[in-house]
Image (cartoon, rainbow, N blue to C red; front, side, top):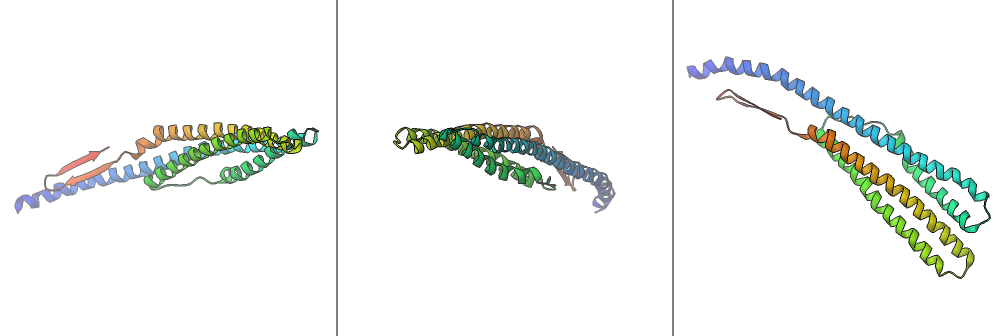
Length: 207
């Protein structure tokens, strides 16, 4: 009983030493999370700038629709404009989106994986768009109606161009996000533990 009583002051000293360190560690972890969240936001914000530029270029190119007499080219530029409007509608919300703050590293990690998954799914869809372009051009070969033939060729060329451009964009964004996660987020995800064995006055730090 005397021995246990004598341990109490020592235990209190250890606790008094550890608590400030634990508080500092928790503060550092919060700063690390938000620093990474800022990197994540900036990276994807730049991606939306690229997508907005690509979409705007396609919309501006609609002017060529009125400069050509070729029905195939008119259909090509008209479809490019449609792609530009859709891509712009996707990019603007992401461009204007505010940076998120995190206090939970599991939530940040989950959101990061979700972002990567979205780009991967989009890349798969881009391959389908490219395949659709080839398909439209194949169908066009069998058309006896020259207007319909020109339309399908024009649409097919647009699908090939747009699908290829978006495929490069989505694969690039998926790759840089994944690299960013491995380089900066994975170290944060390593567990940090503070454990006390009061009976033996054992302090364990796990990084």
